[in-house]
Amino acid sequence: MTAEVRVHHRPDRRRAVTAALLSLLGLLLLAGPIRAVAPGSVVVLPTTGIVDAVMADYVAGGLAIAADEGASAIVIRLDTPGGSLDATQRIVSSLLTSRVPTIVWVAPAGGHAASAGTLITLAANLAWMAPGTRIGAATPIDGSGADIPGALGDKVRNDTIAWVTSIAHERGRPVEWAVATVAEARSSPATEAVSLGAVDGIAATIAEVVAGAEGRTVKVAGGETTLSLAGAPIEEIPLNPFQGFLHLLADPNIAFILFTIGFYGLLFELQNPNFVTGILGAIAILLAFIGFGSLPINVAGLLLIGLGVLLFGLEPTVPSHGLLTVGGIVCFVLGASALYNQPGPFEPDVGVALPLLVVASVTTAAFGALIAATAIRTRRMTAPLGTQLPSLAPGAPGEVRLPLEPIGSVYAAGEEWSARSADDRPLPRGTPVRVVRTEGLTVVVEPDPSGLP
Image (cartoon, rainbow, N blue to C red):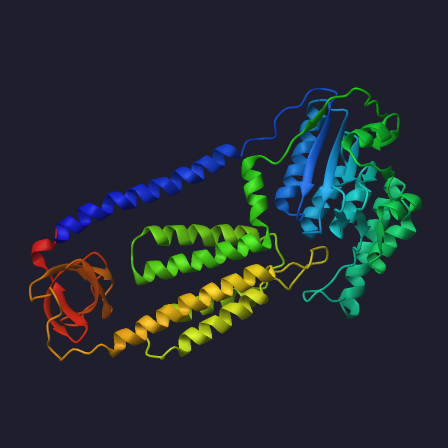
């Protein structure tokens, strides 16, 4: 029986590993460079969401390709609540040193260029905004979303003011307004931004942006150039699939879902080893941490969620009569609520969406209650000491699933049983064993010499 179990499980495990490796290989193959563009074209880069490392690479790569291919101009269609300080600095630097005329178009209607988006917009040669958009609110904030107090606050604020002032001077934008977006968190609708000279106009379509830029003289890395865009083809180059996937991970709700699924996958693997859920759980957690790298993450929230799931896992093994489950639910809800509350200087104040938080909490509570009810019902089952469990006569073969250290589990007679070794010595997973006797609901086993290689 032991040999048969091995024959059946190894192909499944190989298939699972192969599928995971092929998936990763497929993602790597999709991570190709931005495609070439026609000379003289206007390149449009849709830039939406949190400003992160992926967005910075995307914009820098687009500017490089546009310069190498001889594009006439590059338009960054921007809609962002803000983001990483490092990524913002890279994008601003790329715009200020671009060899191709750069245009930021805050769009679509109702969108915004908040916080980091303000500095990106000011760093472009030209800027337009769609109707109903807004720009500003670039004040640095601390880990709780409040003003940074004391000398540190003055240092960060003054440095940011100096930065935005230099950008405004370089691009000929109103310095007083730019400083106010940092010092006073000032935000302006499109019409006000145009009247102040913070942007060049209002444009509802990319065609209007191109028409407004026609004939304007701007300063690029190689000197001054006059835009001649009449009749130029417009080519939109989105994120490649791999970049889009990584950027999607920066969504706070997606990262939270992946993190939760990953923990449950590892929990299922510990309770019922099957190799697949462990791999999928580990991959989900790794993907979640990729997303967390671009988010204002609160480590305490992560630890609370992990502790909550751990308490659920302990419920079947510790006779707490449901108290561990209650504690797990409380930890999970508190952790999810506090998962994102440490925004950086230009990062948006993000959080897990309330509907998702409610659904996840209710689902987790139901799952925890099921575990607790099953554990309590199992503990109430009694069997006289020395009574044989069904189909587990002495000598029945089996295989260790959870290492016996000294208590673990074995797979025998088509089911998994709580078990320990007869002499209390540890037995690793996969060890062939045979039943010696049963003690209540625990199977006492010893290594099976006939099943050893």
